Image 1 (spheres, rainbow, N blue to C red):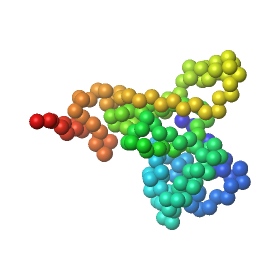
Image 2 (cartoon, rainbow, N blue to C red):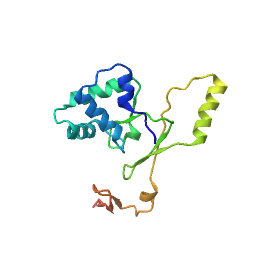
Image 3 (cartoon, rainbow, N blue to C red):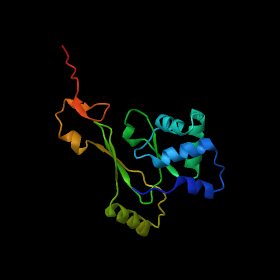
Image 4 (cartoon, rainbow, N blue to C red):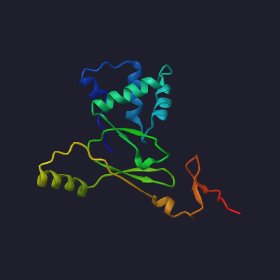
Length: 164
């Protein structure tokens, strides 16, 4: 999915880019997965160890306020955890696997046609669309019901609780 360059966009808006902000923005921009704030903090600290949690949250709020990133709850995977991503060039929605937690971004010409239909029929200017689909990915569907993904990303048998 093609993303807009956050560093270029924020600089064009005249916002001062400190070394800490640059590290947070670069970490978010280069992510190949959706990041929660804690993971973003870890990645940003690899670039600049002086970053604290408050800097990450302030930078996320700034990027949201400027309309440069999206905040997603992704079908409440892992509780109330929120994820962040740089806005993409083309609209998309998310397929969230309830078994392994994989997130797939999906885009479709039909989705784009639906947005155009809404605009033409109702004169409605669409600025944001949030659509999340929850279910089970192809890999997990092929597994026996008593298996799951291990922390290493490989499918392993899940302990089955039995009631006496």
